[in-house]
Image (cartoon, rainbow, N blue to C red; front, side):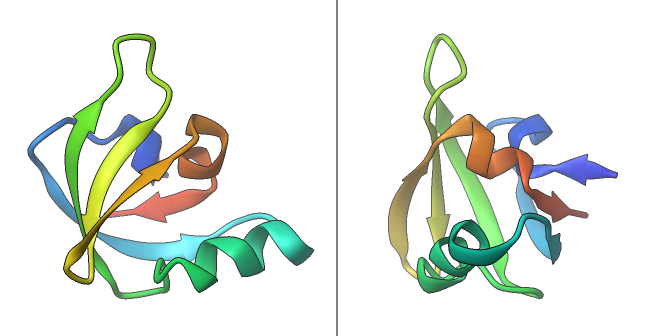
Length: 73
């Protein structure tokens, strides 16, 4: 299982599954991160938090805890 947090800068991946429950999962889905969506990893901060991605034409910053819940391929 590869997560969005483990994806290298400059790679485009597809979301396979969202882990987590309740409000956390709903918040991630509300940001446009749903199954099958293409995500481009733009930047990772020096300490690994946050991760900046481009999804559905806009830029989004995710905490590493949230990025860890997103399974990609």
